[in-house]
Length: 84
Image (cartoon, rainbow, N blue to C red):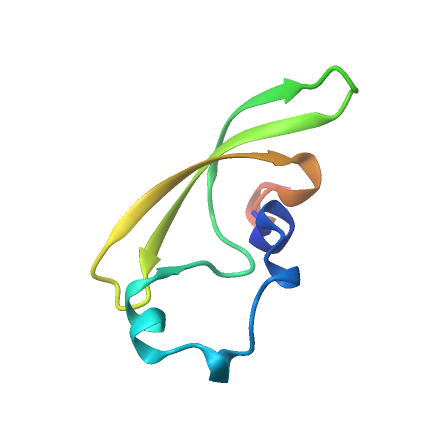
């Protein structure tokens, strides 16, 4: 899953040298591309397809894990290279 597209992160990410170290260590770490599992497709009344997905994410120091349940547009997801 392309998390930049899914969450619009590219527009809101400050420069890395402006983020305090304690935030880097304890906050959730989201990469540009992350593995996830798709559970369903939803179609909106405007004919847009939405994928229902789960993505596992950890804190910067790998001490905490959270599963993100997301609804994202179809352009945010793709099959792994070995499944194409």
